[in-house]
Length: 166
Image (cartoon, rainbow, N blue to C red; front, side):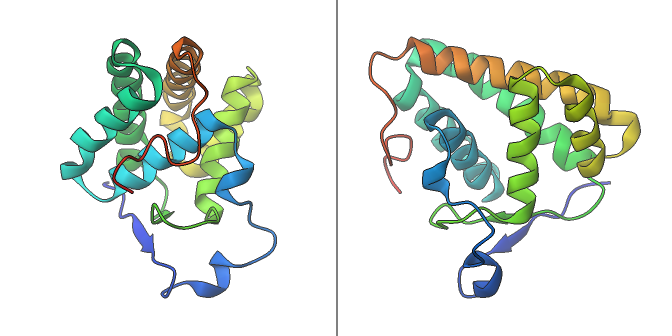
């Protein structure tokens, strides 16, 4: 089963985009903003891969970019290949996270905090149960790669730094 990602362009889903209970991208830490930017860019299609690799390198340095990008691609492929349902992934310009993006960010947060059981439950909510453990491992590795890459950079990632072209 391949995941059908549904775009949430601002005009198409204005109600959920402006709902007060959805967090804003600006509320995320810099590393999570970069991960969200990668997810939204990757959702645009295979042509975005080079842009994502460049964005990670721009934000974290070229040496760290290969590992972080590879981890991201493995997670993206796993989630999109084994998702329980179509996910709503926003546009790069959306100020708020969709509910599905919130669920992905919660999974990332539980993996970062090494809350294995919580990460497992969150993973099972998104993807088929038999793939949840693998998903948790891949997300943990991705988070570690991105966190390590972010620590290597001398300057913090500023708003928009990971997206040189928008």
